[in-house]
Image (cartoon, rainbow, N blue to C red; front, side, top):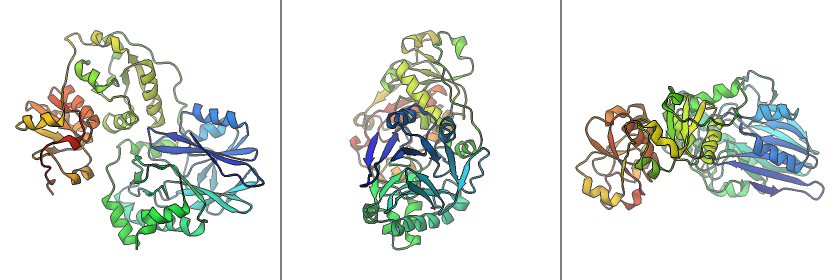
Length: 455
């Protein structure tokens, strides 16, 4: 957590930035004097409750900058627990109690005000929130509008709306830069690595003056140039996103709190998908046949949501610590259907015919195996830096959707940029009866000459 002091001579004020690394997002609790507001809160509320308990002031409002596409919000529940206003952008069409706020309207906090600024572009109803002291604007909580060295992507509402939203994003970011003083803090929700962002810096906050030097919407000479550059830089985004906005507009149950049951027999698993979150080296050396590998990381839940049938029953293989971590990450995207866990020491109990294995190699070994088919599961934008000659180029999500297509013709070498996505893809191919060989190495170590991808 980062705590930023934005106090004036008369009022103490602090911004508590709480990162959610599994989503590359930031949430905020802002304390002004003896009151607090919260902005863009996830479902796992314990960490936010901890901050609020520490500052020991009442929460007066919880704001959403937009109806989120990458996670299920915990904002409404947080507001209800503290009898605070729950504030959504006007015209959000949410099916539950909330307060609507329109451009220019304000809510008081500790003698200052939070002013809504309509900044469409990431979504149509997107709202940024300007924190103003009696002396002027102090900070803007810009959600998916102005990011740090980037902007929120404009294609999540579908291709029919992308052109319009790109033009709106260009206008919105320029409006922010033109209306706020240069020293104003810029505190976005989406950060570098978020699939809701297009590019960006590793920094989590900025200032208006810094963004004038690096933000693509402020550096582009025209909306046409900006829109073209943005359109060419948008990677594929997770398929689970299509479930997020509907969930955020409707009521949703509280997340599960009971401990996961430890499963000890095949009968306990029933029809659940077995998701092995152990380090891939352990999975490769011996795993339950048919299980899928999603090594514990900040990316695991995103790729589970991207590649598996939405909200299907899961059983996790891993330690208590790691299974609870991934369960929390899944809760953030609204996937509550984890029915139990298998201890690493018990995996053999679930493999009556013996544990399965997967061969791993590095890129130096790949050149000795080149007669074998090679499968590159990176994002298409990554192909621009070069591809292994002769490799089939299929995004991870495509492999997961039809793994049997890569399981019928003998061994296939699977790689990505680092080995993580390749390990997931290989587990799908193995579960379909194939014989994958995984390159667990940085693609920078490939010793041959990269080819240009076929157009």
